[in-house]
Image (tube, rainbow, N blue to C red):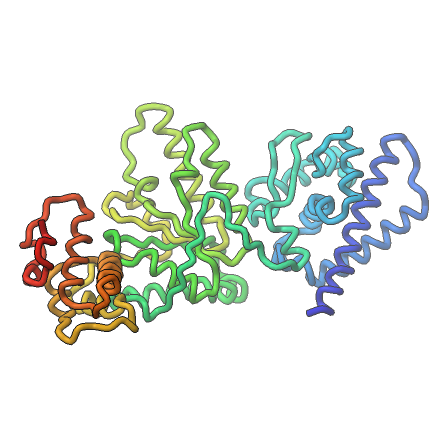
Length: 444
């Protein structure tokens, strides 16, 4: 590993030295000073070195995987250089009128690469929306004018240098720290099989796309639908744990803005922050954005559709797994669901599943009363997996507070508390056969 990093460092030194000499040539041309023969010879030598080293893809493969042209490489090297070498940062600032901006403008890039006006269209194509640099999330553009700045996307320089992946939580997301395994899932077998197929989409992407020349696609994108508490986030945690990747839940509420253009900007920041990083993104309440479209009555309705289209485009372009969850699949527009690679419905647990969930969620070392009948509990009240988890833990704390084993009274009271979270009026009939185990006065 040490030898590999040393080779990569030599490769990159050649890149930065070449960029520095190109910048000094720009300064000479601006004052009509002829370049020194030694500088011309050094540039020619460095170009040969860079050409040979790029063909080996020792370092650049970490960010581009062989998808960049020679001009793409040149632009990216010029954009990354000021983050690596301070002397290049100061050169850029001098060449751009003392601006505090250390990154090159489009106009400066044209000068650095000595692009003639007749060839400007070729350079402009490099940072177009469908070109490799933006499509792969390697650069960010402040605007479309000649003096707008182009900078490397977050994390690109670190990946190029072989640094450890960024651990900071991307803006607008929350890290889900719960680690789960396949044994934690209580779902029908066909749903688990679909989840494993989704993992296969991620793990075998290089074979299908790179080796078999399959049609490139982003994602993969999955939709998990089902009532609250049926295990959608748990399933996402299982997938992330299987991959060994972090799971980030995206807070759409914090990203969506009433100001035109802000929502797209916020979404771009999230996707740029995770581009190239091993991570799973989870978008909750997908129906709030991908609901059935109605009649467009005003500019706000039209703009809302543009926001949805932009989010879909970014999700599909993102080279990493995205999981969208919804409690109300019926509210989703069918036109959107066809854009997902995998759609999994999470059903409410049946009797056998509820019995297994009760046994799974009670603390494994907790003392249990011999009279505890979990099959009776499972058949009496139809809680979801999330409700069973909450009630099981509540019962454990009740037993611990009373210095006794977990029995039917503790489970009955815990279930009563869980049912009361809905805010509806309850009667003992809601507990069915468990009502007789309730502690005296607890159901008032």
